[in-house]
Image 1 (cartoon, protein in one colour):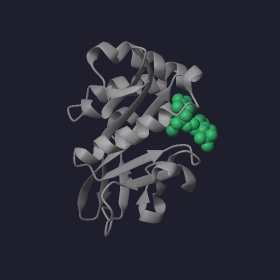
Image 2: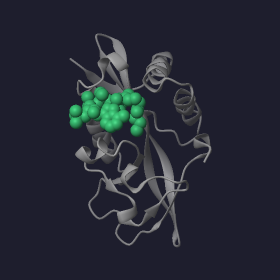
Image 3: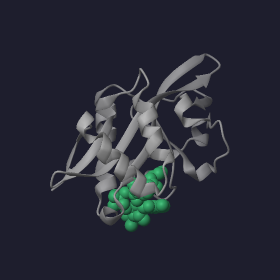
Image 4: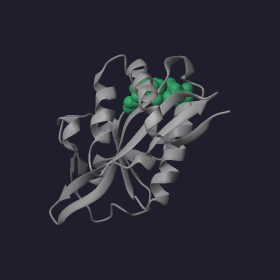
Length: 170
Ligand SMILES: CC(C)(COP(=O)(O)OP(=O)(O)OC[C@H]1O[C@@H](n2cnc3c(N)ncnc32)[C@H](O)[C@@H]1OP(=O)(O)O)[C@@H](O)C(=O)NCCC(=O)NCCS
């Protein structure tokens, strides 16, 4: 039985551990902590997967913008996402993504961008960001640069470049 819920301050250490174990390096754990310090951080969209009172997964959606000729369009970045190695391939990640997207939608967000595994995210509705006339501020293969419109047609008439907040160091 897995519960998906927003993080609380008591989860910070466990989120750090899950992220470190999943990625095998410090960078993504630090990214979570740096994003948490931004004034526009949305704690309701930093979700943990809990089983038997242990945090076994985490997903974070954080605000960023699409820079267009007509100004900035708000969007969310899905990153990072982690599941404890011994708990992977049991559907925990899928539950985090599905519940996360549901919460993004209910908070009124319309667009989610992810740079990630091309075989994983399309099952949740993500598709090519470049096909939707979005560009990344760094080199990324077409198949790994993905976007989801939470509101159908949210990107109609929009073309631009993603601008990440400073913690991404891009
Ligand atoms: C990616 C991750 C969060 C998925 O969590 P999970 O709980 O294992 O996911 P699920 O059980 O819901 O789904 C498993 C699917 O993810 C796929 N998957 C996991 N890692 C993958 C990878 N590196 N590349 C492509 N697919 C991957 C599995 O092959 C499996 O696919 P299948 O359902 O077709 O067999 C987890 O593997 C993880 O923490 N990985 C290390 C950190 C990471 O890469 N984060 C994502 C950055 S984009």
